[in-house]
Length: 392
Image 1 (tube, one colour):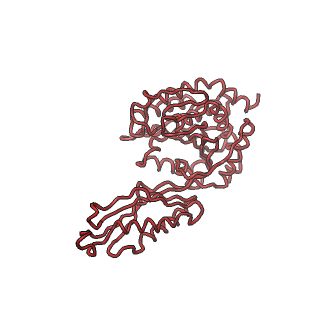
Image 2 (tube, rainbow, N blue to C red):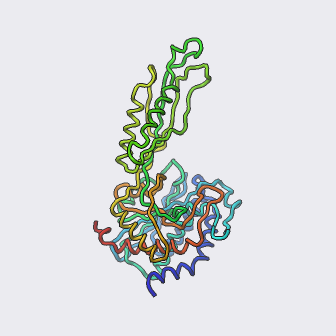
Image 3 (tube, rainbow, N blue to C red):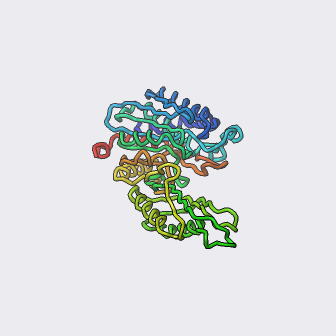
């Protein structure tokens, strides 16, 4: 029997176990702020990875869930990194109120798509390869972080440190609802722009005031012109605050901008263009400042040459498995962007097909579990055998 057939037959035989494991994991509340729940998920994966011969390290966090780093040495040269996250967006009690259910081809439950099923696919792909006795890699590292769903991050340095140590990064997030994997993601940043003016009575002596709200309005209008400065560049004014009663000339106002661009260099260009807008005089007597909000933002997942090679491997393997596959670009952010920031090629969306994340209808497709996990297992083999990717 070929390696292809061995992997598929192993996964088909294990599908019911996979669903039982998913039912167990979806039954654990593991919102980002629920340390005990996240730690239960991490402990479960730590035990299973240790059973597969991985050296497992729990990186303790006092306030947040622990992060998990597991490594296994092989007999080849390639170093491959698998990444995912154990946290969800759901509050305590969600797991009990919405236990995992199967409705036709849909498997519904909190965190099924984002991303407990993807983590399981990583585990089951590694089990299938272990069943075959495959050791053709230099090392496989599994990193599961606990804080992907929130802005207050502690794991960014871990991801940025691990990425350059590997030849490829494979992300276990779910495939898009149409089955696409992700080959590039935009960089994103939030900037807070604040205007400081001078208060005055709007009816008696408005001329003695300097309207911060007017300045912010003019900044927003000018910033909107930056949309499309280059393909994919976007500027969105989100939360706007300022002023008090209408009879007072506002002395303070602010706006929070979301900036996105396809490359890290273009993000710097866009941020510089926004700063020029902010620094230009808008209203006499009003000064405006601009600063990063919510951390340094998310770097781009750029489509390096090595990423194209990984994509080609994935498309070929999918065809062998009997389904079509395409790579997609998206404006959304993912932890893969941190891991590939320094130039390591990567692919995202290698978990089962699913959708409606962060909602009561979140799901994965049962019919995608075996083929997508087989794709991941064979992609690990193809990556480890790609000498140009390793030596390049």
